[in-house]
Image: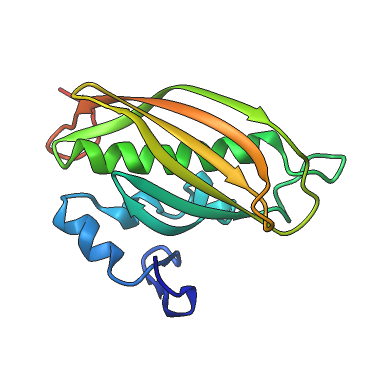
Amino acid sequence: MGDQSQAQTTPRTGTKFPPGIISRFAGAGVDLEAMFAAGHLGNRMGVELVEAAPERVVGTLPVEGNTQPYGLLHGGASAVLAEHLGSIGATLHAGPTKMAVGVELNCTHHRGMRSGTVTGTATPVHRGRSTATYEIVITDDRDRRVCTSRLTCLLRDAAPDGTGESS
C-alpha cells in the first residue's frame, strides 16, 4: 500500500502508519490512534499496520520478542496479530456507530519461525449487520504460510463515548 520509509509515526502512540491512513480512518469516524494506544497488546508486541480497508487489512509482527521457550514464534503472538487485523477490518466495515468485539478466534499453526517478520493479511469471509468474519493468513518472509486464522466479531452499537458500554 505504500513505502514503509514514508510511514507516518504519530506522537500520541509512537506507532507507524502508512501515509494518509489516519485521515481515511478519521473520515470513517474511527480513531485509529486510539486502537494503538499505549498499553495496547498489539502495540507492545510490535504490530505495524501496512494497509487497512474493510476489504483487506495487512500488518506485520516481529518474531523476536514474541517467542515461546523453545525459541519459536509463540502461537499466542500469531493469535494476537490475527485478532488485531481482523478486528480492524470489522471495525472499518461496521462504521463509526458500532464497535467490533471478537467472539470467536481459531488458529491453525503450520510452521515454526525463529527469526524475521511475519505478515498477516485479513480478508472478509462474511460482513453483515451484526457480525463480521475475517480469514487471516500469516506468512513468513518467503511467503510461506505460518498460520491460518478465522475471527468472528460481534458488531455492537457504540455508546456516545465510543466505549460500547451503555448506561
